[in-house]
Length: 123
Image (cartoon, rainbow, N blue to C red; front, side):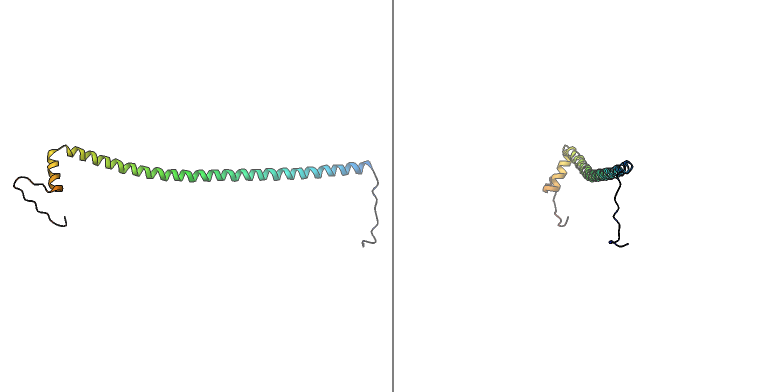
């Protein structure tokens, strides 16, 4: 049928049709509200998930940095402890007169009575 040949149909007012139309409107409105709710909660859930992932990622990056810092500080502590032990041994040796005499002969070319010191280059 063409647009010119269509007949105009008028709706007869009846309580059944008006109740049916109201029921369809309610159903359509409920569907629309349900879609809006699901969309809202979906967006909210996605946002919260992204926030949690960001927090977890930033915490893992911070923990990795702290672990690297801890390893670096432990290595520094170890080297300082070795240096402290070496210096404590040096202090103990410096209380010994023979060590002081030997050190004076090596560093300052001091000699004992009748001793001749030869400086050898390259040593």
